[in-house]
Image (cartoon, helix red, strand yellow):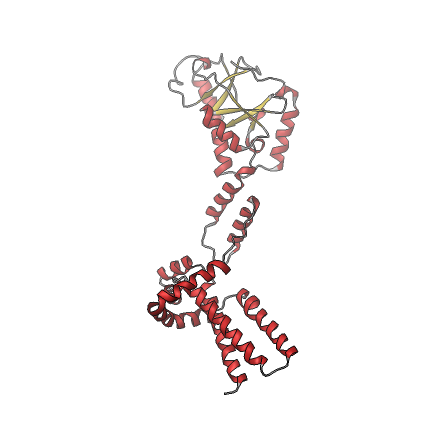
Length: 334
């Protein structure tokens, strides 16, 4: 057998090792296990040998040795220049192009066919082969591709585009909201005065007022000193015990007031709700004037349910800010 014939055999075996690496390791081991549990015939064969961490190092070592042997034998039969060209070509082929190509069904079938041999090998020589586990740990560390906070959202978008994605759109949408929650601002979700139903301390609790409160679809209300006053003196929640009985709003309201800036984050708003135990935050502009309210439901919707409002809604909020009639009142402590 000539050197070139032997070199050709080494080359074919090296190609086989490369294809086996693609078949066994194109998917993470935990995904192989999931598919094996789901009774996929191919992956039931792939998972047992792939579960040995030393398999990756063994295949890498075999492929490297075979490529090296091929290049040595070829170099003995060709000139120096041609030998260098062949070496560069095959190093690129085995360590750049082949590892990054798409995995084919042939790769999976070859890996499944070879699985019994590797299982036998590991059962017989595992004490020795386990030292190969250090090779993938050093040279094949998997990087997530995430460096900064915005990269997490890109990671979720890529997941949604995967052809074999099994995460539902609803789950991905919730994850995206959680990841982007830091960007949510009070300004995007608070209710401006124009759209807020307010109560006065002197309002009488009765069927008419209770009906108006119910129709407003608000769970909490800002309370002012008097009717049409801009001086906020407290907040009232619809679930207050005894609210259906006679009396005035002042008898049931809470005089503690918590505030939040319209440019603050929803995360800050949730912290304010937790520290103050109030059901409603009074939203202030840069001049410390009250421009609206933010309920706990609004903050939770920002976290779990709603998208940012349309540009028209934000423009309406900006118009509300510039309206003297709506913003002339100053926040006062009760």
